[in-house]
Image (cartoon, rainbow, N blue to C red; front, side):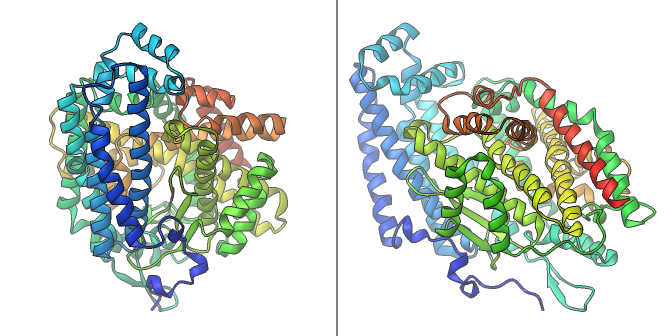
Length: 597
């Protein structure tokens, strides 16, 4: 039986090294205690933070010191928990870290309402008259910008205390689908039993045997169906929490509240979704190409992940993927390329799936650590692109933290997804330019068009779904499982009109964890659009365009997201980048169709 290994069975060379953060859990506990002890220092500024500029500066610096230490405590606990979600000790560590994060947020909650109580000229005078306070000028501007939606210190403290509770639906969903659920084993075409997991589900849907794909598809969704009411409740409560928090902060909608945080106009959301919907003919053309390539009468839902290229996709072992990614990022400069190579060799990455491991992939770490990347690498082309994607996030973190003080060392998701997708596009160009094997090249082109399908179009469909269910909740319409099925199924039918639909696909919303992230997914679509524009500039203009892009990454959060992308030469207020990405998708389809013919 092909089964998922236990963590102890995986070689240490392919695991991340968390001992570089804390040598052992005793050190983690000491760091936890140190943060807890500092909360009293932070609270001591309540009621006096505005006495003068020096006191305000001291309060801000104390807040940053506490949050900086806390960030590492929480990241370590999360990564330990993600190694094996069945490990109760590590789950308890993460729970404690979340509780400490809520306590720290509560302790600091007085600060921003206090700052907002100052008149703009009073704040300007403090900045001008206090050496060191100018470092916080953009942050202070951002705090003042949000004044109409910040409540009293007492209410802000209460909201901070409730943070742990309000995030519970997503946490329950995560543990349910990664730790508690066991999907069935199915028999592959060779007669071997293969266990379905969240991590290998889409890979199994790329197997050539169509009956096997159908079995995987139906087995997976039938297993999910047994928890339909539970998962429907977790998603409904998560959406309801978004809506209620927006109302508490005096926003008209949950979407407005979510997008006001990074200062992105809601028009940007509508522009990307509407532009993609206006160009569904390109996606439909891709679906029809896939139907012809598979030589089937109708394209079924279990066919959607299949490549249009003949034969099995190339195996890409992890070490080979690493070399391709390192070479692919060379257009961004030798310093960038070298740092990627050093990071991979320095145990940044937890490579392979193990039993109980958190599904998917992410780049983590903190301001005071190097990046850490979680993967569930499956030795295929798709996961090589995922590796490039996550290392884009990692290098963004390296550049931002290296150039900015802690207060600006992070960055918004809106910008983050650009960095990851620039790396994906560079990898595509590298592979097409250097690999001569026609079979491999066809699969690279197929991967490229699949990235546009899944990132530009599928995530726009997800964004439309997310907005529709939030709007329903705002209108006090109960989000029952049936309603979620109907809403999702209608969008799936619109986006994939040439395909046939079965009863299972309506509940695909049940397997998407990003729906618990509060208006997150649209940023994949804006990200791939901005990335395509940036890579075009880099390829046409060379080093100067690459440096503009790296300068944008170095800004961290010291400017607003749209301004940061303008530094890289992209205007995301307009439909032009999305239309250009659609055109790139169509062009790649042209190339692929020509190769197939």
